[in-house]
Length: 172
Image (cartoon, rainbow, N blue to C red; front, side, top):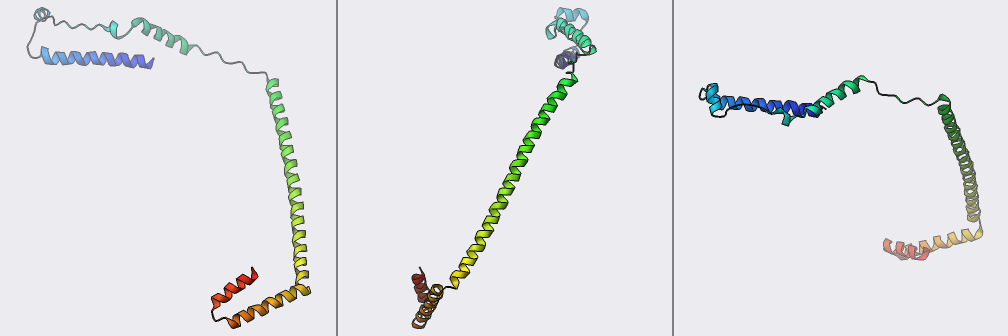
């Protein structure tokens, strides 16, 4: 509707500007009488029927009057019982989901706590086993042999890089 109105206004402005241009360019140069103008076929008539459709404009005007004055029919609200029942079902479903998630979380916490306790116990027993091994005669003998070899290689070697190489070779 706005488009039709703006098109009509624009068309009328175009006709007015064309008329003014013709008036300024031809009619001002020489003065014509009505008889002379008719003699040279200078009648100005605008055919608005081609620019706008009156019947269509009347329909639009009628539509604007009737449609905007009459309120639109509103949708009838659903009965209150139906909505609350649906919401209650959804809430119970969500509560079940939350409860299940809570149980899973608590189970994983318990499993993590048990796993952490097992890891601590394993670490303690490993540390005790290491201390026990360090106190054995085999460990002390091996440590003593490695210390003697290291001293012997250092004494015989002048180059520190050769010592590191040999130590690496022996230990690996």
